[in-house]
Image 1 (cartoon, rainbow, N blue to C red):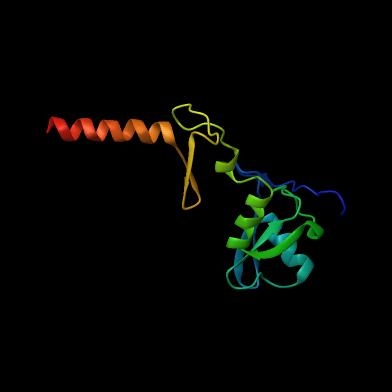
Image 2 (image 1 turned 120 degrees about the vertical axis):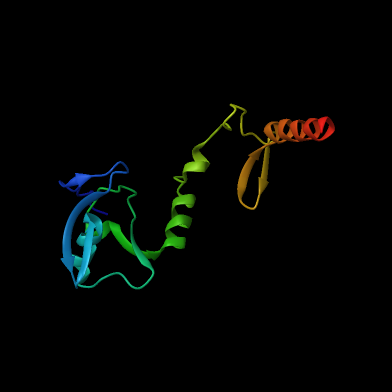
Length: 129
């Protein structure tokens, strides 16, 4: 695969390039989507988005772009270890997410220590009422 070609236009806080242009009667403002349309001569299909093989949001190299559903894009992100929650090593209270302290429910991680503190607080409030 060739090297990334990064956009020279404005980049948002996530690194995606923006440049407004009308293509096929639609306002398109993401530079990687414009690059994909220019290379393929058509809009992405209904319910489809343009994703990066290279995981570089500012890349506009058409060889690095592919069409996928939002769900497929999320699965690709998780498989590559780029999903934000996967990168967290501690809960909000600073407890480590390890095997002993992590409970997984419906695909989300929960801190067992925080669960225990919440349960104790609820029991204490129930007794005092």
